Image (cartoon, rainbow, N blue to C red):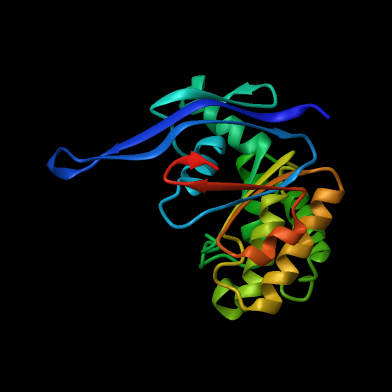
Length: 223
């Protein structure tokens, strides 16, 4: 199986007040195979979310390189990075990051709007995605009218809108009760079985049972 994500000698430092430098990543190198479901674990401050954000193009490293598919992510300019994120990465966040003034249908359709898909087509496809995650009866509800588990399912549907080969999930079960968290991880496993590469950042050791590989981090290092 070929690698879809290659991280080479990645360093990330943050310059804080009073000339304090925080090392978030220290010479991190790894490869993730196409079709893997990887959980990345470690305590707060271990660097796991920083690693994911750099892979996803939400942050830039101090040095080192990241290759995802055909993209050398660390060499992209801002416009190229936006295309990379839109075409290659589906993001799922702990806080859901839904737009509160939009319905579930509008939230899921938003990435398609940014890709220039006509309105009727994007709403039709958004409805199909919401049906896949079991929310066809909630398409006109706004996030405040839905449970945490339902909001996360909307976020998963939105992450799938542009059919990305890679899904990055940062603490996707962190704000959910146990049953809802298990449901979300089952959905991610199903997406993985259908061919997507998935990288999950989590504190929850129960999530490792869904993974084909577990990466552990501490103080900016891979263990």
